Amino acid sequence: MKLSMSLIARYLRKYEPECHILDDTVTIKGVRFFADQLPEYSLEYVYLGTSREYFQDPRYADALLLSSGQNQIICRGADYEELLNDVLSSFEYYNLLEQELLSAAAEHCPVSEIMRTLERVISDPVTVFDLDGELIASANESAIRDREFLDTIRNLNILGTNIIGRVFTDREGRISHDLTDQPQHLHTPGAKEMGAVAMYLSRQEERVGFLLMFPADEAEVMAGLCLMPVFAKAFVSASEFVSADSLLQGSRSVFLRLLQGEELSSDVMRSFENMLNPETGSVVAVFRTIAIRNYTFRSMLKRELEKLEGSGLLCICGEDLVMLSGEKEFAGIVPYLRSSICPRNIVIGVSMPIQKPEQIRIAHEQAVFAAGSSNTTGIIWCRELALPYLLRSLNGIEMAGKLLHPAIPQLEEYDEQNGTDFLQTLRIFIRLRCSQRETAETLHIHLNTLKYRLHRIGEVCRIDYKDPQELFYLELSFSMLQSF
Image 1 (cartoon, rainbow, N blue to C red):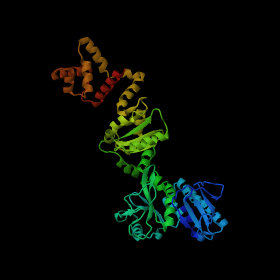
Image 2: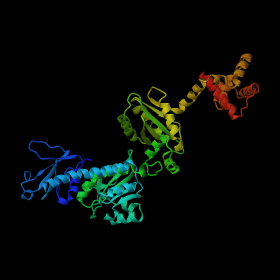
Image 3: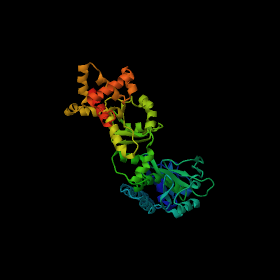
Image 4: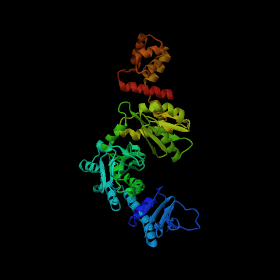
């Protein structure tokens, strides 16, 4: 891993180095020596040499200097060769730490096991919590000097408002109301402790927990700010956050697993039900570009949509950007999608409403079907395509046309022989869900006339208007007849 000057200084503590670090960025990948022929020095290296050529102060006459950019580490009374070896060893030390953490993460070890890896090399207290403040694991917790905090996690294993509700400030004294996705050093005003280096743990752009490190001194604070992202990268891959049966995994992870058809535990499914709208239902929408298919474009579109209220969950699945949103909420963003998103060579396929997590995979297939049904851009609703598609499928079967309800050919012949319009009467009656009033108004005839016609149709064709199966058979037959 690349190092910062504070990480190198931390490893060289036995020299009691004097540090002047102004810009502690993680950029250093190796060590080089000062040389007159190098007018400029790269920030990718730390340069080693004697300090007498750079400082007039006699106190530094026999000191060695490590420099990178505006940052200097001064080691008095150090042996040149020994210091060089120790600087080289610092890279090996942190690289080994990173490799051990990444190996544990790749195997999705529990957080506690990753903590044990840290304890071998880190003496500072480190704690990992879920988003509800429940302690998942800790290292070196006895060294925490904030007694109230220590007593809370020892006795309750969960943080309360008395801890989280305290006012924290950053290094400039500005009040910090929340953690961030990057490490920051937080203080409790008036407290003598160094405070904590804190950050959220995020997986797939969703926060799943938070990490606290309690540094012993200012040097450890600077090193912690550099190390925390490395720690976080390992912790978010722990089994607690990635296991299919874990309740701590993010909702986006669950959503993606459901899209991919994975089997999840009943507890996870019940927990995910909160993401669905039980009253009006939810829809799955697939955003697919016509002209451009690349990850960068999908990521940019995802960030743009996340700004919309009602966009729900968004994740990238395969070649598509997929959204899970309440049906009512999705309807609220449709005008924006039509005016600002669809003109950009994007087709949006929308599923039928669902109420249960188990239906998400089918809803995704519906949305993919809708998005792939047209070469034009815009919003395509699966609901509008379903019946025509089913009818076309039936029409593709040669026998289907011979299996229409027998009333259709019977009434065609009856009308031709008697000059009546019974077939049209029955078709409109079925289309209007057997509403006599609406049918009479549509046909512009008296209600009694309609009743007579329906009675005669029933006699001629032996139709039972009270049989739901027969009414469905008639509706399907008329729909197929219209699509021929």
